[in-house]
Length: 195
Image 1 (cartoon, helix red, strand yellow):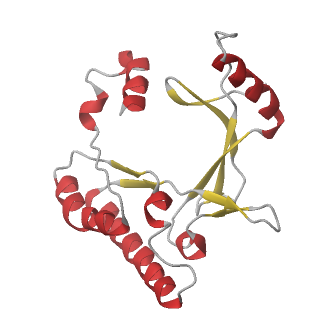
Image 2: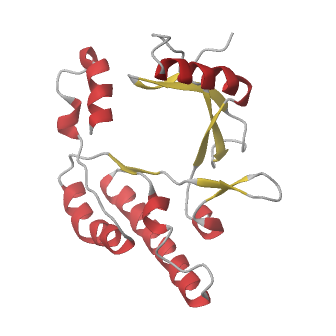
């Protein structure tokens, strides 16, 4: 909540109300708690009409250790869980007019160097749209040096490290066709105009 408060304070003049009054936070620690939240608590919350966006950050952190990767039965259960949750969230989206954002982590394939979703191929079939956010490798050195200087209090103002948002999958765009630069500042995620 501290980071949300910082963003809200930076954008204070944009709202006639405190934006944090319109944010609900529910912490879960494992797949069972997440499932129970989705099945029992979330529908009641959505029925109020108060919520229009649900963010799960990070779904991989909750689910990664829940299913054994070397057990075929556990892998089948994991796929069933993913598809069941995906169907439930799509139904809630249609019923309540709510958008869901589920943040997933990625890992690099050691052979190819390509990024892949941490939750595997089955999960990648459950999403409607996929966005990838990554750091700008060209500026990695200068951003790292800047961060070190800020840490040592030698430099008072540091430029935020530039990232790119890529539409990796969407039924509305050609994959990879949209790539836009952005930075994360005290006021949140901000687009950058390239010159």
